Image (cartoon, rainbow over all chains, first blue to last red):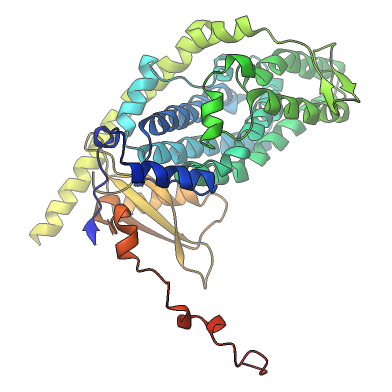
Length: 327
Length: 102
């Protein structure tokens, strides 16, 4: 038995011995999991840190567009649901930060990367939420796309990531259903309510499809992530799967998806759909979306405003520990 | 750097590992980790973070830095090979296979 002493990330960045590399490859090939203190290639570690922290940041920043509507939700029931959902997102962020930490990065560093823009989060959260129907669209489309993306991640080759994702997926399905029901209720309402639902879906549909990332030919890291079994399906495959799910759901809602090219393709066994505006995607990614600056500024302010609480709690804990030692 | 999830000293609060008993009769199982200033807050935070849907009836927390574990690189020598010790399993005993209730 030894005290737990994982090597520092720097030490682990070494090439690794032949045996270590062989063991890593064997585990990946056998579809087994890599655990925190196993040897792993430096690029695998870095890819995971980037992906998991980006995912965690997305959950935390994702609280803002919906937090925007908590005080104005149309009923007490809707308010309670929205609060539970935003609370879940905080929880999901924390599960993921914990998973990232097992790779040798601390939370302060991840926070700094977020507020300095060194780390990204999902661009979808840089869109604003001007109407109540947007709470429906976020649940149905944004969380729907997220679930499509996340279910295969439950089998990611890195153990802590897969376990966090399993927990998240279990909780996420209520998010999508509650969004769908918000839209359904609006679609059963007055003409103005129906128009509000349709207008919102018109705005969210394409950005939700772009959540899967650029087309496969423009996604150079995808292949390697798939070889490492971090990623299980390509961006385009997941996007197709999502569209195939959406079309019949839109029919139930009586809502029109804003793409005239959507058509069943008997030969492929899938729905065809039109091209997406990737210039918009790259613009938002580069920081020129509707709300990039606001999202990060608010996150930074919340962190700074909470500093005294963290410090006071720590001082109190230290004082109590000292008291126990003395008595 | 003292446990799998404890990555350094820059943080204001220490890291805790959380174990949840999902229902009576079952063991506590590792659920994840979190930061908290002390053990009381760690238990409360664990309740908020890991039992929002009645996932547990009891919570343990332990400072990540207090966990001792086996050396991951010493698998071979440390976890002795089961080879040649098939007699530790019931399936080793073939003569009694057809005998009822054995």
